[in-house]
Image 1: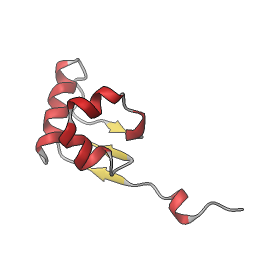
Image 2: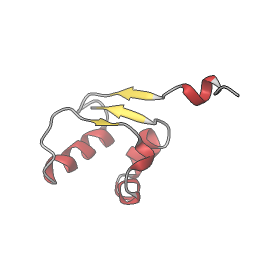
Image 3: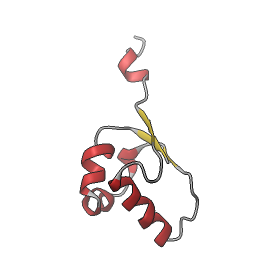
Image 4: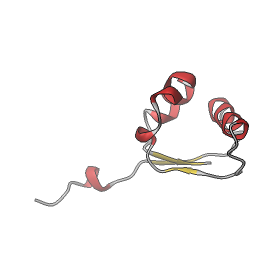
Length: 72
């Protein structure tokens, strides 16, 4: 049986660092822990540690729970 269209599609969001407040807070956090890259990819939001979902509830609600991958 071949995979369905839904199984083969990828839900991706491309954001600017200052485009959404929750994303900006996450990027600030990443800078503070030593991730100095201005652009990065999270290829599968479901593999992020549970703490990220707890520490950034708006990011979780607005993006991480809805989008599988995002680029900043």
